[in-house]
Every structure is written in C-alpha cells, then in structure tokens.
Figure: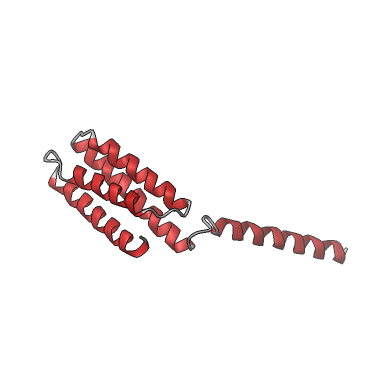
Amino acid sequence: MLRILFRGLVGSSLLLFGLAASAEIRNPFYSQDEYQITHSMFDKLNADLDQAQTDAGSSQFGVARAELTRLAQNWDQGRLDSREITMTISALQTVANDNRLMPHDRGMLDADISRLLDFRTAYY
C-alpha cells in the first residue's frame, strides 16, 4: 500500500513539475521576462493603434499594423532584422504624423515609438 502511494506521489510530482516547466518556457530565444515585456509592448502598440484609428481613419493604420505583426512574428522566431524594425518604426511615425489624429492619440503613439526605438537599441 505504501509503495503504491509513493509511486503515485512521485508520478504526480513529475507531472506537475513538467507542466510547470513547460508553462514557463514560451520561446527558446529569450528569457520569460524578455518575452513578456516585449509582447506587452507589442500588445500596447496594437491597442494604441486601435484607439487612434477609432478617432481618425487612415489607410496607413493597416500598413503599420502589418509591419508590427511581422516584427512580432520575427521576434518570436528569433529573427532580428534591423530593416524590419526600421520599417515598423517608419510606418508608426507616418500614422503619428497624420493631422487627423487627436493630440492624446498622437502622444500615445509617440511614446510607443520611443519605446520601440529603445527596443531597437537594446536588441538590434
């Protein structure tokens, strides 16, 4: 009886340890913190683009969103292409410079661009 209980305990411990370890590893190229911080930045950029697009429609939003999506996908795959981040920053600057943007939206996008420039300095 004790042997069965011990085997069950060891087996469930190994299972829980394996699940915990696999839950923490999302990307083999970056630490968990790097991954979470970077994807938080990407998520905020997308949310700010959505907010700004609600206030001022422009075809440039689609271009900026596509560049940001491509940058996030390349980041996940460990491909750090300096041209890609430069194109993303350029597309976001084009959106931020749109005269139809509300000042608050422009300020959010300018702050996002600044974070992306810091990100480029750190990783590219």
